[in-house]
Length: 163
Image (cartoon, rainbow, N blue to C red; front, side, top):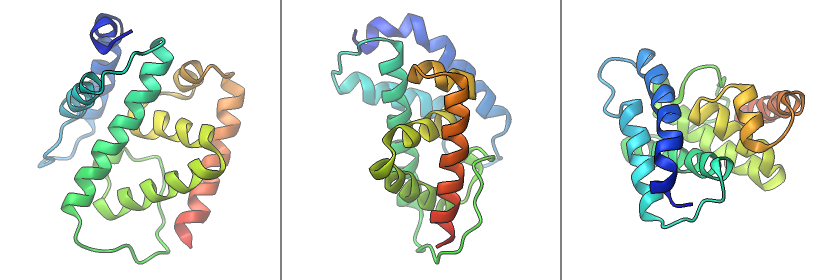
């Protein structure tokens, strides 16, 4: 399936995610959630990926959104992280300072080396904004497994970020 074939099936879900992010957006943000979804959609369309199904699409979209957010944060950030940062994954990424977002991105990349499925779950929940049950469905795992993986990933990321 190409992105154009998936558009009628998933765009409504992506718009719901964008609308929920817009509600919590801080004034003065230069990238709205809708713009993030559209930019990710454009990147996926340009990549000429043949998606196997909705699950494959959402996994790829999560990665694209993460890369867009990180690229923007890197472009805006002129400071280096000095470590010891207390970060939670409870705030949406568009409300975090760039330094924290970059630190989380580095931590997710490090987690992906050890536990790629855990890192993908973090992308789906934290970057895309899916619920635990929605992320479990996209990853084809049980909600209980997704909850265990989420708890592990959050703890792992916190330890990594406090170094």
